[in-house]
Image 1 (tube, rainbow, N blue to C red):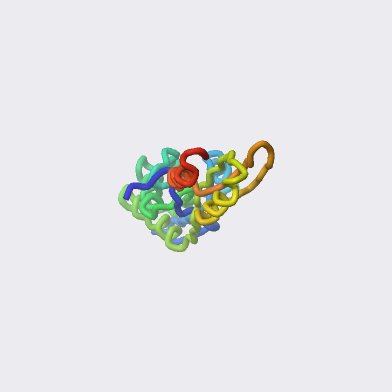
Image 2 (tube, rainbow, N blue to C red):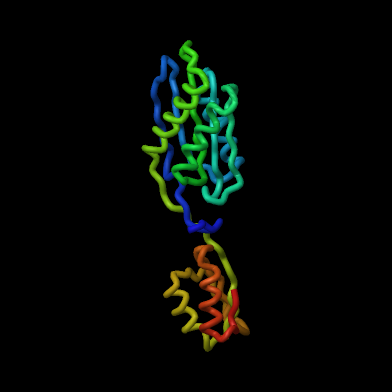
Length: 204
């Protein structure tokens, strides 16, 4: 089934780290939750400051739903093209996690790994991070405004409760005005239910 942009998706619940050594080079992987490219840039800079003497700070991030996001970036940070950022991104995308930044810090140990060795080292580091990563589900929410007649307030409130819709504000004037919050993915079904309940009089 194809995922919609507003479908729930997994995100990092907290930071995860993994470290190992490959032919005397030290690889440290760190995964963090980032909800924007600006936040990703801040996190990358923070890790550069935490590991200022590292040889490379290679990274990849996916902001948004991992199945539909166009906010995907990577950086080899001086490693041969395609040997660091791309392997990191491949691991992240395979795990289907969004709003995530994964940085692999390398301290060169004096032994060259070659292109294939670098790909394996960065991939295995990223995999080690993702294997210990705890995730939670992000459900994008939408907000809408309803205007209803007084006679329809009670049945509509009952309908909203059945559909797990939260009523955030209510104002009483010429009509009852409600502000509601609900999972964005249910917008179409909610609109259909409201229209059916009121013969089309109430719309989102």
